[in-house]
Length: 361
Image (cartoon, rainbow, N blue to C red):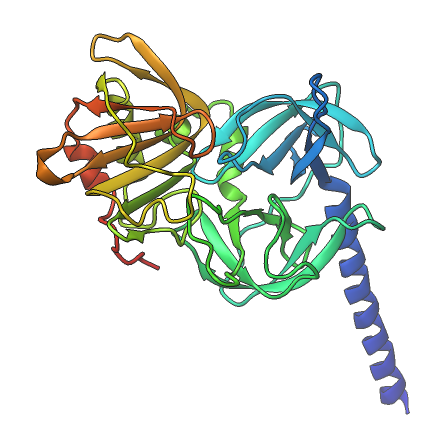
């Protein structure tokens, strides 16, 4: 009889500890999760919620994830769980993942997220999003299904009330409530959207590097946020942010920097139409398309600024000896012009895999 009573007490204690842990995890995540908005403009455009994020650092900073395919750095507003609003400015960007460090004006001592380490394959994780009735709720319990691509990203599997897709910046935590990642969108125009793909999560650890003031600016700080390489009838699109291995992101960044400063005469771009879903299907040769978080300058070989570009397409290996060229735009995949490329593309070609190269998982 005594042993039976003792067993019941132990079960109740374990149950209570489990409930307490879940409550603590929910409380921990709910307090630190925020919404990120583009505020209403003077031109009459209404405010738009663009992402989620978590409070970090000294309680006046936020790590979020921005879709730089559609957004260029500008004014932002952060809304906390108690509905307090703070003006926010971008302090640092990890272009490889889109993870962005925001500084909140007039904020101090806000509840800081606890950052965890990435669990193993098949471990359970929680995704945290927004609903009409609650400020922050656990959308779903999911599992880590695979790394994708490389150490910066991983995938989670499972269904949410809104389907397999997660909102940009949806917060992912481990079962203890420690934040391990932010959901990144599969981009509709630059990358192919697979049928019901497992959501891609940007690991939060890359964002922690942005919080270290004594770390020198990494090579990739000025690199592209999104990339795709295409040949005739094929595009490598099953990724977010960086090209899949065996590409070399740092080498690509340096090669692109050199090429953007060696553009020549303007060229005709009538045979390109990047506004259609199948823009990559009739390419002549190979094209690398990259999107930068901030606009970049295109310059002649003598240093004159010729244009500003948000995205750039580098095209080589064209038929009939046609010159290498660069096309660009200041809006998502709308061509504003093109130039002949005078620089050597050898380093760029070495840094990116040929179209059709399988990603290394």
